[in-house]
Image 1 (cartoon, rainbow, N blue to C red):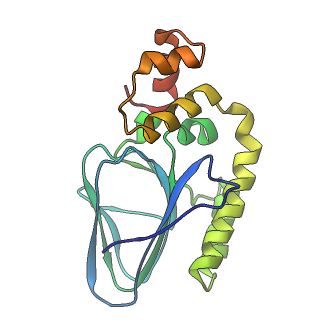
Image 2 (cartoon, one colour):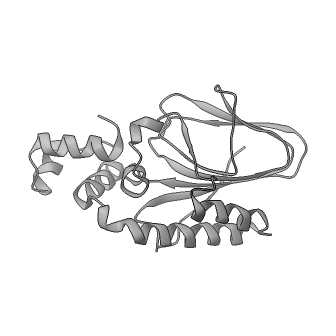
Length: 199
């Protein structure tokens, strides 16, 4: 099943690469494979049957963060479903949630907990939302508000470097990027690892 790919609103485009929507109205069992792509994200799911992450056999909450996929995983869904994924740039997890990115590579972080009032309340609102467009708008507004409250923590040098690496499909000399950002290579590597969790 191919997702519908939606460009994020310009207000969050600095942090969100793309929005993916998977939908089905059938009662069939569907397997959605996910491969290593280097992007963490936020997933909201509205399913009327089972929703299980493989190979971990993990049942997930309605809304959660996921880390970078290093090993292929899949999601098994039974029954009608709607899944909305906000695909983040790699620096987002640490900067905005304070999560060490490598700590949730190939894993997830539950946002639907009573202690996380913003996203716990959002889950209830999203569950009663009638359209995909409305759900995306609600998620966009919540993320924008959340990002605005945390943006002073953003490492703009590393954020620019990541976007340049992505734009050049990895075909760029890291020393050149570090020099443009006025960083020595060791400082650049340390900050890059801190922000992305990858070496």
